[in-house]
Image (cartoon, one colour):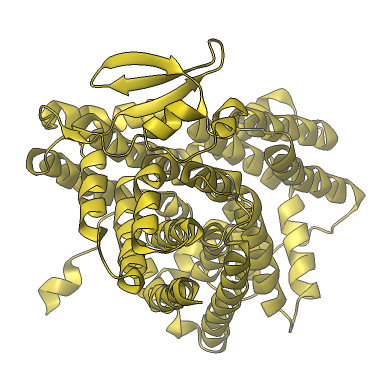
Length: 501
């Protein structure tokens, strides 16, 4: 028994390398294969079909789509609603095997880091900004003030954070951007005598339940509906109900855990790390005598404004990582001017903050490297083909629930929600026609399945989030699995109800 106690759960980096090795092995076992892809060329107003390395151009008309059995209005392509290449039904064919070996295994994380440079840069710049704000002691004063204001009503913090982030998730797919919130909110949660898991849960579960029940999210709901050939408003009522019920379940689940460990800190799943985490995030705050004066309020206002501008830019102006990163860099410079931080101190503090998040940046790159291995090994399309073959001809009630479970599995191999939509919807949505259910229910099965897996996905942003607070993946699984089971049952009830009523 003592031997097992000495065995420690591996770090997030090691977990990802193990998964990479497994994926490499799968590329030797699962036959390589691909569907033909169709994309729209606006310059020549033609469809381009990619088939085995050769390209063929066809007129961009509805007749062309009908002949290819793609039941999507041609306007969706010409308006830019579908900008990524989509899979063409009934075109799957096995290709020459592309097994990934030792060289590919070693290069995969490096390629992943290169492909994730935009989000990695965002993380490093946020780390620098956090360090600059810490140097002003604005966090110390602000957190001490907030902890005093919330005394006796700390649960409001859980409700507020989880709900607001869920709203971001359901409307514009707030997910990777949440990495910015952890360094700010963890000290606040710790100051209210909750543990770090409570903070991670409020942020990450909020984002996950929001994306699971996306309502107007252009990166999942709208692109999946377009790829299925239906209007995104179809099935909206079911998603709204799922969002409401799911959010209530999630907030209740987090709050019950938080209140339990507040009464008895030893019941925390990370109680053995309590001192370590508090020292990391709360060391200077416990003994602070810094008052929240006008200058520090202005620093916090600029800091908070960075996130408000980011949310507005992403949701309304079509911003992506370059614009978001620029906002945080500008925020750091403005705060330095307000606080009269000299040039040498600014560089030292900024680099120190970026260094603190370097481990997280590497996790993001290594996770992306797993996707690189699957793409280069050409097994993603094969898995989709076998999934579609498995569900074909099933009874509709059984079909939709098996599809939901299959999407959970596919989400491991295809972590991108938009990539999953354009790859699978043209293939899977016609199967809904065959069993006599609406395509909007297929879109919901895709969203619920992909969204549910995000709660535990090691190939997404989860491990990077956990690394920020030094929480092990095993501790997270122990915390989250009962909620995952509850949400899975709720999702299956919603899908089954949609089939029959």
